[in-house]
Length: 361
Image (tube, rainbow, N blue to C red; front, side, top):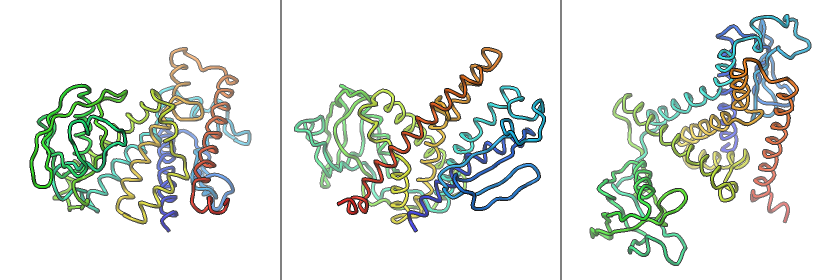
């Protein structure tokens, strides 16, 4: 059931993305002839006055179809309500609406988790040093920091019970590469002041430690709806920040980070684990995937929303679109590339599943 829950989450997020495109088109009076959740053979379908609505066999996909290039369409080629005949701005709204829908949905997922499940907090203030990096020497060991230490303050910033305190500490460390930081540490009911000098790394300062909340995370009920929206906004902002950082590292340190890219099998596996251990955290998992789905789609790559927006930008600058043969060539090349990467990730991650390893011996 946990695997089905994770697949259902991904299916809902794709549905929201495609629904964004659909609503943006129909609200402008643009013709839409197909709305499909999933791909492959049709399981269920309903023919509306203009649009065919379908559910297909494989839920990890979907599309909104326009009659512009449909040879069976009875709509006149010069109809002003065909997508291709609309101004650049109208088309840009339709193309970007899926990304916007995913971002809005992610925010309300976070607000819902806070409102109905509670706000996750550590029982005690501070950030726990869980482990030290395996190097013989690093900034933490040189400063005398030990596993089990609790950092109560760094560079004058005190840390409370919120899970966001870990990111606040990381930011302090990253922003002071090669500079001394004064830490207030609790070690077995003893308070210590320790100075640490973060090592300068490509992503900022680092002291070589693993961090975790100070104690088993618990949830407390929200005081009111305003707090739910406020905490949800903070979590949304933090996920956006971390996502941008992650994509930045993928570009600047591709060799180191490419192996960490997750495909659909790994995403479902992570989601299944969350659903099995903490159903309430599925809200957060769904919000995280929804934001990442938005960022991936907005990348200026062929066959993605960002690639189509790039074509529109070129059209706006040139005053006319690129020739169809160029657009089709770029889109087909991009689609083959993306499908290849997707298949590679699926094969790689499927081969790493325990039951597959056992089957292969």
